Length: 500
Image (cartoon, rainbow, N blue to C red):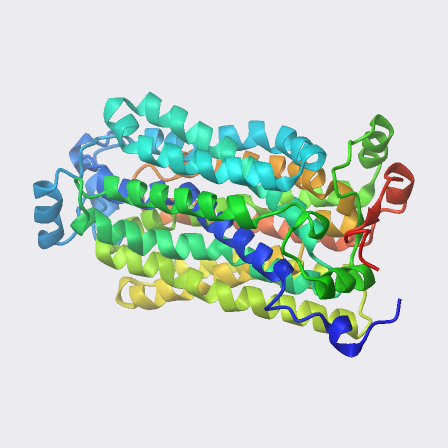
């Protein structure tokens, strides 16, 4: 079909593929805020025990004092301590081990939900499961403060349910990208949708630190009430505007339909069942195993950093709650422009005929090396440079962003578009295992929060990042699996058949 230049270009910002991507990005903001908010909230929820109660030997007080910028049992500025006392904020005396288990509980639900969720999303579509995911997150956010006051086991159960809901939502995210991203602008739409990951963290940390000190309903509970309200609003709006594919959208223009006919990806609109023979093919596919291996090796460090950044800044550099909220969110502010820039560069390199596999290997390697090496530098910086050290953590975020957007994370959309959610579910199972293991490992390795203990965490992370980079360079691929068309024969163009 011959199209005019205007139709061929297909204006992006007035299109429903753009606004569907924005809805998916905002959903990811909700999911990431739910995942990350507890790590910051624990800073103002939990009263740390005095050093005398830490039974690790007679020299523990000296160890805490001389190797951190301020003893970790220091609870913040005098003003913050008074405010928190008056507002009944620090109501819990949970140990570091219990806090680690509470952070990891989210990923029990994530692991159990990710693969079944991927199969269900590919079978019945992403819209339903995206709506269910955000609605569940919103409802459980309203319940979370009451759960915490009831018993930590009840809070644990709520977090498991939230993790299960996020698994559904992230699978639906990949499904929608595969249906709405044309070959021409998939990398750009991917980078826009990815903004939800850093934006969720960027909003969560300062929001939590502010509401802990000044929020209604006792301080920290207002964090979860506000997030619940935001999730409910997204669900109501998206119920009317979010649809599985261009063919299913009632408001899409004929111009955009023609754009998809020219640039669209051949996919099955109603869903694709995964056949047994296709599973056998997957099990023998090198690029698939490379994706799994990279996901497993490259995300321990991601979770060790993202889930524990506020605790690290408090333990080693002695930041107060207010300072912590600002400095914990600062690195993530850079990830938004980096994400967009990465998508633009990838699209530019593809237009210059560079193989997509080569592009993704380069971005993935660079990102993993930056994310792995930077914490090893930061942990050696002295207290007099603590603000510079916190700011230097920007490089960790840039590295993870580069690897995610330009590297391995979105290769399910490239390898197998009809089954992107299923393949993403397999990959995310390994990612979820790290989300489960990392908080427990960090809690075990940092019982006192000393600089030496955090150094061990970052060495483990760095070695795993390096291994992940090597695996993807050798075996990773972004080319469509050669047998896809054979096992998904009932594919059709992502456009309405009645438009000529």
